[in-house]
Amino acid sequence: MPEIKLPITRYYGSKRKLVGRIWNEIENLGLEFDSVLDLFGGTAIFSYYSKVKGKQVTYNDIFSFNTAIGKKLIQHNSNELTYEEAISLLEPQQGYPYQKIIQENFQNIYFTDTENRQIDIFIQNANLLENENKKLSAYYILFQSCIIKRPYNLFHRNNLSMRLNYNGGSFGNKKTWERTFEELFLRFLNELDEFTFDNGRNNLAVNFSAADCLETADLVYIDPPYFSSSRNHTTYHSKYHFLEGLANYNRILEHINHTKNNREITINKSDQFEKPSTFLTELEQLILRHNESIIVISYRNNGIPSVQSISDLLVRCRPDRQVFTLDLGLYGYALNKGNQFNNEFLIIGTNDPI
Ligand SMILES: C[S@@+](CC[C@H](N)C(=O)[O-])C[C@H]1O[C@@H](n2cnc3c(N)ncnc32)[C@H](O)[C@@H]1O
Image (cartoon, rainbow, N blue to C red; front, side, top):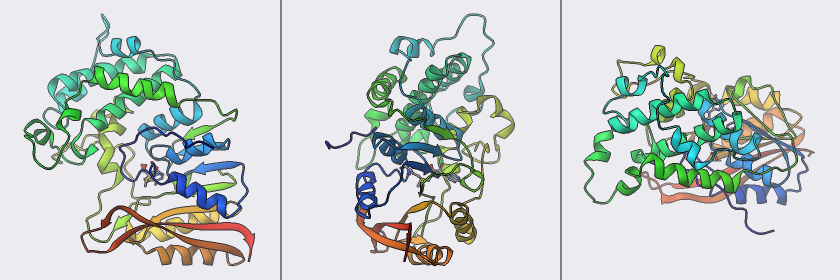
């Protein structure tokens, strides 16, 4: 089979570079499954790969902006939004009473005044679209463009000035940050045209905390947030809250935390799977809920709790079935700050009896 082409992702923890290897390991174990549940879906890369492989796929993520991306790539099979339509969404429609929520509350925080105005108008125009396919395409190109225009591709700091004052040096991609929405929309619409397809199955994208997600499948993929021993933990909510606000535009105003410099938008903020002290208990509940399924957990060897404790947990939950812990090798930089190898692992609980 030719190599599978995947959409480019700029998302923290994306498995884009690893998903082919992860899939090979699953295949090498000879595991049989027809359906997949991607519980911490993120960019939808694992779901997308599973869709290409002809599986019946359910994508889940706690954030609605991610679920919109999942709906677009996994649940939907085409892109109906044209470039001309996308560009017209940046223009105000006559007589519509536009709110200026981003312009008035996020000045000098993430984007320029002109960009803030474009975001306000675009998202409200997108929300007026009755065609769900076009609306999700509009969300997709806006979210991807916002991510690519941000230093570090993140929203946890109000560092617009870093982007504007950047004058060369070792870090940064000023050229990309300064690309206009008009330019970026073209790139991401092309991406949607290339990557949306029908695999003949009824695929689904849902929006729950993994702990509350009642969907299930033959194989459940678990790629949770992880806590590195060497750094303070920044939650996914903190990294991407601004996009979660855009996906819930009419709820932003009552959810802005004005005491924080970055005006955090608190929609869908949750501690679940984001605190080392409760992580193992929460994971245990997930494993028990999906007791009939093959479980595949992605993890790193510099995480807290350790790979070993997660593997032990799986063995404890399934004493009668096989558990494999596979080292996929180095990930990203060869050495992290503590000069420790940073390897990516898979912990797999099969349905085969020992
Ligand atoms: C390591 S990332 C997953 C990356 C994904 N596999 C990919 O390749 O893009 C973890 C994901 O879990 C999501 N998340 C965080 N807490 C969650 C929760 N309680 N339930 C479901 N998803 C959650 C985050 O939004 C993030 O997208």
